[in-house]
Image 1: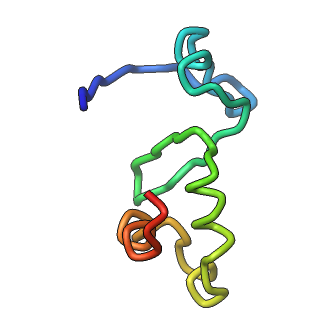
Image 2 (image 1 turned 135 degrees about the vertical axis):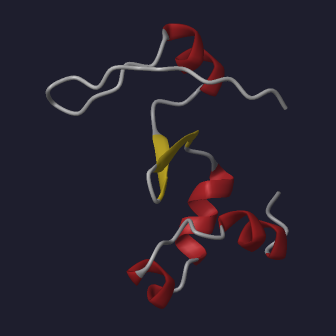
Image 3 (image 1 turned 180 degrees about the vertical axis):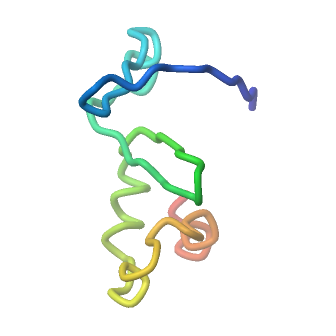
Length: 79
């Protein structure tokens, strides 16, 4: 897995433009945004993430439903 860092501008309406190549790579027109303090993770919406969200307990949703999503996915053998 390669990590790259990009600096993107946020327009007046809070939008971030994703380059055409990225949009074609993710093969989805929907994304999931995970907020960890001041870090934003943008992931393509997949059945794995959708399944994780639908399995989240209401008490988890009050806090942060994505806080420990990788462990939850592993537990549920969704990967």
